[in-house]
Length: 591
Image (cartoon, rainbow, N blue to C red; front, top):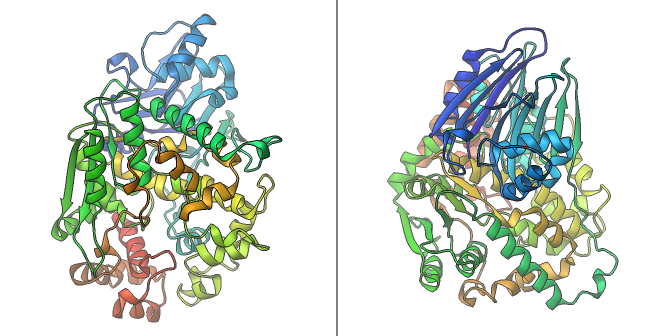
């Protein structure tokens, strides 16, 4: 919900109203319902609103509380805002609106940095204290809501999307060499604080950052759950874990029903989204709208899973909409899909979510979606090989990395290859830190807290918000994840992965959607690139901009263009799509 932006001057100057207006205009699709800009002294705040809670103008942003001396822009939703509001009212706070934005203002005044630990929700917010001059930034535990930053000549700019910052000008748009190494290694994931552009950074998840008047700042991480067993967990039976998990899932889904507008579901027909539909039905949701998307078959690979989404829609009586995308429509949607990306993302289902969101936004403003279940409950194929690992960094890299540092040296041009294995160093820093009992726990923590943030989570946020649609992800309820982190790995890896989640799902949804081969969001035309897709990528890689940039060795590009279907990464991605998408995205940003 919404888009935020702003500029803060630490050199005594005034913020650029024109730069804020430009950023707000770029963010307009995220918040098509209203806009606002407030400039006070050295701080300028901009906002685009999507009306989900308190549809009145009383919750307009930027929100200023003159009595408390606080100004705020906020993107997201605090699901427990009514409980927090009641607690704050008992403390004597008075409210002029009925939404969650004002609750953040009062909560900060009452509890300062501790307020974020009380929030159940997804959020990125920037708050200014009039009297102290401090500027506060915070991001939710999983980075569901984005926050990009750039320093530009004595000023700090921020926005909900990277393109908004670039469009305002004055930013170093050169390629970050270590970020490029991550992009090519982790199928486009660039972990925070880096982005592919040297001059733009992103606030990491679960961080509160407080800037002083002079521009100095301190970060505090407020959430870092242990992936380990508590004393007494060994006595918990499988049935007990199942009961605890089912109750946590019910709570997570129910929390995300809160809205002053209808809430729908993105229904792929897999276990995760089907379980959400079942739990919503169980919670009494009536007139539930569900939505699925499918594509043409390519190279013998089916492009939809309608048989399963239809089954769930019939079982729970949803108002179901199926969207079939012919190849010609897919091609037409690619420029818009790429333009909607805050960072280059190679997953094929970007265009699926983009087109699905376009249709869904015509009917509802809020949907629940199943992202995160594989990372939280061990659904991917690279977890079982780690069970007996004695070298988790090497073993994880072997099953997860698209290519080794040595191979990358043969593909990137000399000036673009990092002088060390930057991605291997990142894996070591995350996998080997304390707080995880087993190699599988270490991998689940890395995927849930790092890889998930800048792939599935970012993908869904970018593609849904491109059409003013808010996506909520109950599998990333932080209390649910804290519980899952305690569940022994063997309970997750059973039954081909997500064993305990499947146990719970059988209590709610038909077994036909559970006891089947794991499916993905297939867009086969972008995996087996041919015809107009191949022509598009060839033209992009041979363009003047690409030749001037010269990120890749010519011999490597020639091999990819000659036989694109033969160059598939270990995680079933097209190498040609990976390199072509990067160049297309850079050119879409005018870089």
